[in-house]
Image (cartoon, rainbow, N blue to C red; front, side, top):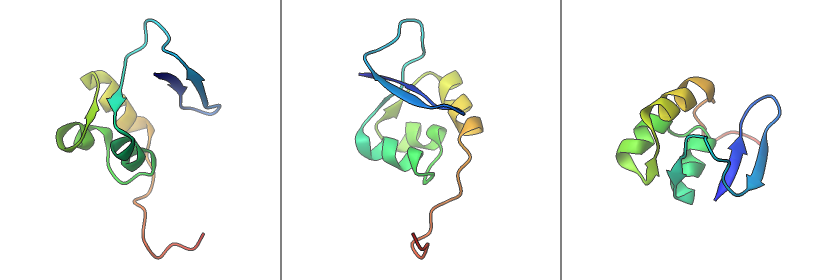
Length: 74
């Protein structure tokens, strides 16, 4: 269980902070979201990615990453 803050200054802390909405996801689903492969609301239907609708919609509007391509040079 972690508290994750995503923003201009992001952070990850061990443990849950009371009063925050909770997202539950397996590592594969969260990775697809984090890397920009799928939107939160799509993963909620097709993968182990669950949370309140308000949180999922907020994540969709806040995390706008380009779709990854296999031929990108790193």
